[in-house]
Image 1: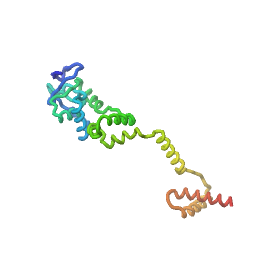
Image 2: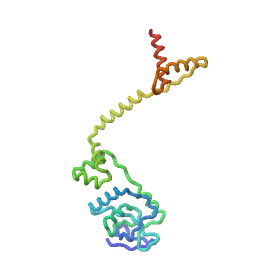
Image 3: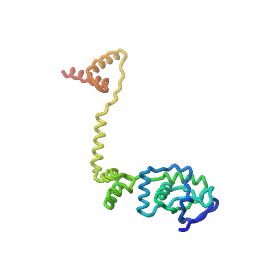
Image 4: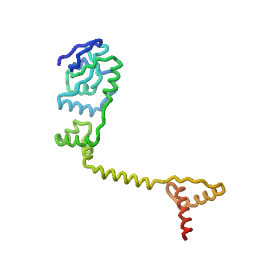
Length: 225
């Protein structure tokens, strides 16, 4: 694919890829997308292994002749630079400054989330094709995370759900209840004194509520006796 000249005021190649020398490619000044060093190294290893990569998205540079401004692929650019590439494959996207900012905010941010079970199946298949150390060197996860994700396939999800439901029900049954009632003014002092006396025999949390229960039980025992 030949390198295509351009200017910021005229369209460039129509819907085809171009190759741009690294010296003519400039990151957008407001790009905020960064990648940790370890993941950047893995990205470079993936590109080196496959020998190809998704094209970078660029536009004609708004102020520099014969140059391009990068809108998407900043991490790929850095990885390719580390690998010693002299030029990169790009998809030209001529646009104004406002559109460039929108693309910068969306292309670098919109991404899906893995479904854990599906991710586990994918990693399990990969583990049958590549040694664990190779997977850890190429994937975002480290060796421990890969192993833990694959273990999801061995979970009995129905039993796990039943256990969680039973635990939640047990917690609900054991949780304190809020009981409220009103007393007449002439009874208030007697109630407070009785609760204070009963609390003296108790330790731990919720002594006031437990004291009320103790009083009620002793009253019932007296009635039964």
